[in-house]
Length: 204
Image (tube, rainbow, N blue to C red; front, top):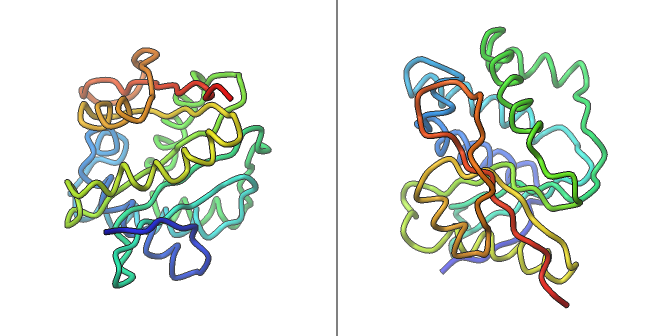
C-alpha cells in the first residue's frame, strides 16, 4: 500500500534524486547519452538530479509515492501548463557541469532539445521523469503515482504529454489513457526510439 503526496522537504528531494538515478542508470537512451559503467552513471545522475531538483522552478511538481513506513518508492516530475521557460542560473549550470562533465552536459542538452522540438503546442501537463524503486516494481506504484496527478489534470480539464522510452512504459501509459503520437527520432544510441504520447483533456 502506498500513498502519494508532494515533496515538501529537502530530504524528499534527495530521496527523489536517488530514485531517478537508480531508475535511469540502466536506461539505454541515458546510457547512450552518458556512456560508461552503470555504477558511475548512477553516481553522476544522482548528483545531477540533486542539483536540478534543488533549484527552484516555477510550475514544477514533484510527486512521491511512499510505503506506510515512510519509505519513498516512486517519484514523478510534472510541469504545469504554460509554465515559464526555465533558464538555469550560473550556479545550477556549474553544478550540472560538475555532475555530468563537459561531454555529458552537452549530450544531455542535445537530448533535451530533441525532446522539446516535438512537444505539442497546445497547453498540457508534461511528465518529464518518473521512476519506481526496483524493490517495488510490479506492485502498482507507477499507476498509483501517475493516477494521483492525472486526477488533478482531469479536474482542471487539461491535457497531458510524455515520452515513453520502453515497451513496458508504453503499455502502462496506454492503460492510463495516453495515445501514441509517433516515435521521436534523432536521439543517440541504437535503442528503439521513444514514443511521444498524448492524453486529451477529459470531457467535463
